[in-house]
Amino acid sequence: MKNLKAAFRDPWYDPGMRYAVPYATTVTLLGYNASRLAELKLPTDTWALIFEPRYLEKLKGKVTVLNSQRELMAAAMKYLGYSVQETDPTRWAEAKRLILRAKPYWAAFSNSTYIKDLAIGNIWVAHGYSSDMYRARQDALEGRRPFTIDFRMPKEGAVLAVDSFVLHKSGSRGDLAHQFINFMLDGANAADVSNLIGAGNPNAAATPYILPEIAGNPGIFLPPADLPRLEMLRDFDAKTRRLLSRMWTEIKVR
Picture (cartoon, rainbow, N blue to C red):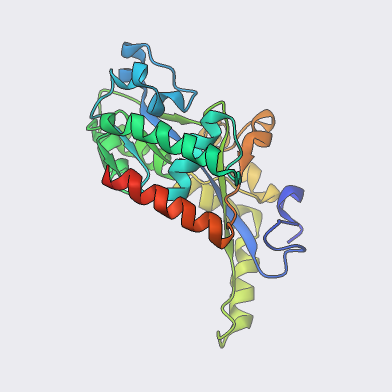
């Protein structure tokens, strides 16, 4: 556990790290066909790329967004300058209007197919997870595609996710589970998570073993100046959940 970075040792969801041991991080951001967007002279560092008609007119049918109420609305809230934990209904309604204005230009709501579609050139911009964008980038390279996939966090901010090891209370071999977690906390072993799937890493001892092209990718390991603009999604109270569920239904059916 001593190998974990200080920023991950006392998370809000598990004070004192009693139940969960973090091993990977991802950021919800924008992946894009760098060659196409350069030709179109479009910005790649802002959520405006998927929300503003002046950009979407050049991308109609070539954009996908996550089929996730919280993730898509969080992107809209960040673009509008609000926290993803905002509870003011009028601000969420503003986010809903932003999404509905952009929706006609999008090709699909997608949680997984965007990896392949981005890699083969069917879409040019995708709202998704940094590790997925890394996979799309590698697939395009391996497929010798005539373009490059890149990804970055929008300047307005984004959502951070932390994957953790936990033990189910009914498990019969907690001793083996702890041995495995301890094995994965070793720096060289922890680095494999980043090297294999392009995930960020909360393990400081892993840094020397992470491939330079991954460790130096600002879409995977964000520069310190970008970290304050990240937020994790937290659960809402029942009233806010009902409000957002209604809004999401209206977004999907219109």
